[in-house]
Structures are given as structure tokens and as C-alpha cells.
Length: 214
Image (tube, rainbow, N blue to C red; front, side, top):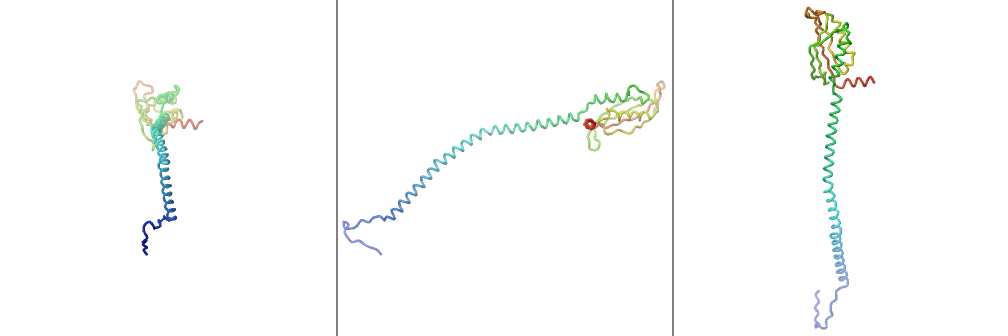
């Protein structure tokens, strides 16, 4: 229903704002102010703090980047040196002193000058890499001669070779065999036994044999 006040303006009662409406309006304004204050605190306070922390972390990161790269470089160099050390150790472990081996072989063949057991010499020596099964090593092939026509002296030479320090490191040797051949008539004896000597040497096998003895 609509009410119309017909009294003159000077006699009309001034309408006052309702107290409830006033409280509601004031409360709303206060709430808006509080929200604005909280937002300002977060924006200008916490956000500034976060930005400062981010700047600090970024600075620390920039300092750590070259250090991390240097650390990676050191690790790579360490792995490289470890690989080289392993290779060097393997080379040293598998290294063969052929000079020492040949000296030992000569001692066996000479047999301290005892030519009654065998008197042998060699016309050729060939050393080549090879395999015995799956094991890599070296073939040592010689063309030998033993004075006289007694095949037993060839067997004596093979026995002396197998029982000597020279044979340490060898994994195989052929069976003694030979063929009697005539030499020059003015030689004594005029015959000799030609025989092959084939052995297979495995690097590192000699050191393993020495360790077992100890």
C-alpha cells in the first residue's frame, strides 16, 4: 500500500535511517576495509618476502651452476682415469717378458752342456696371437733339430721343457714326434731328428701358477 503525506514540507517528519540498516552498512564497510587491508598485507608484505626469497635462491642457483658443472667434469675425469688405470693394470697383468722367457728356453735347451740327454737346436721361431678355445694367448712355433737318430732324445727335451720354469704360463704343447734326416757326412753324428715344437702361452697364467705355489 502506498502512503502519501499531504502535510506541508515544514510540518513533515524527517525520515531517519534505520539503525539495523546503519549497522549492516557499517559492518559491510568494515569488512570491505578489513579485506582490503589483508589483501594489501599479502600483496605488499608476503609477496615482497617471497620475491626476496626467490631472488636469493636465484642468486644461489647461479653460483651453484658452475660448481655443479665442475663437479660433473671431475666425475667424468675420475671415470676416465679409472678406465685408464684398469687398462694399465690389465696390460701389466697380461704383459709377457719375452726376453726372460727366451733366456729360460735357452737354458733348458743347453741343459748345462749335457749333450747326452739331448743336443738340440732350432732353425726358426714364430710367435703369433691366437686362441685356445675361448682363451686368447700366443702361439709359439719352432722348427727344431736333435742330433742323432734317437727319437728318445726329442722326448727328453720335451720333458725338460714341461718341467722347467720356462713352461709356466703355457697351457698346451704338442706330442714329441720327429723324422730322421741325413746331414753332411763330415758331421758327427751325421743324422739328426727334425721335429716341430708347438706351444700355447696364456698371459697371466704364470702369475696364477706362482700364487698357487705360495
